[in-house]
Length: 110
Length: 118
Image (cartoon, rainbow over all chains, first blue to last red; front, side):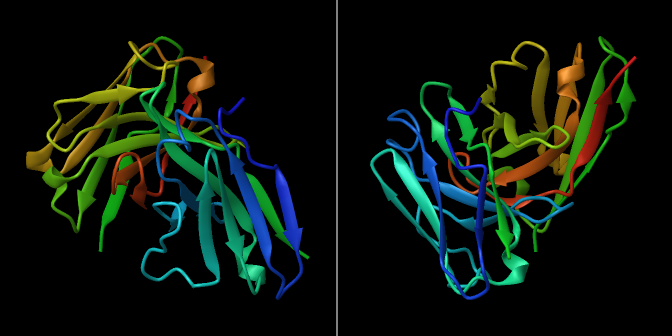
């Protein structure tokens, strides 16, 4: 059971905006920035948001992130079929002295 | 661009040792912290271990502390994970990842599969 909680699934239709939540505690999200990773089927994870709201070069501006207190969220606007993937949030945890990931959210584009 | 290539994954019996390697290119390896992250079949991501850029500090998830050792050889641009006394629950794809900042991973390898089974 993860110390950081994500909904197991989310869905949307092409063009819609979807959000994925990530809930933690004062020792992780409450104290550190959050990263979001996209994992397409059969591939390695890819960083899509870092420092809670920054996009790496090459990531479409349809992806955005935010953080408030001990929670964070990833938003994807103008949803596309290619966005169908598993999404994980991650943050450093001061109590565990390591990185904690959420359990992952499977995004389905209907 | 940064490339990370893992190797060493195989089928290993419980209690036997195994060493994973990750060769890095396209970066100044000695300037970056590095980590191992694993993913059991059909499961989510789990951070396993990390090492600072200078190798002075290592970090481990509780479930592997005392059994696994992370190390690096900057002369070979290589990260290692020595797995002692592996258990069935250590079965997973192991990814090598480059640290952007305090456990934020901006480059990942393709992964190497470790299966612990008798």
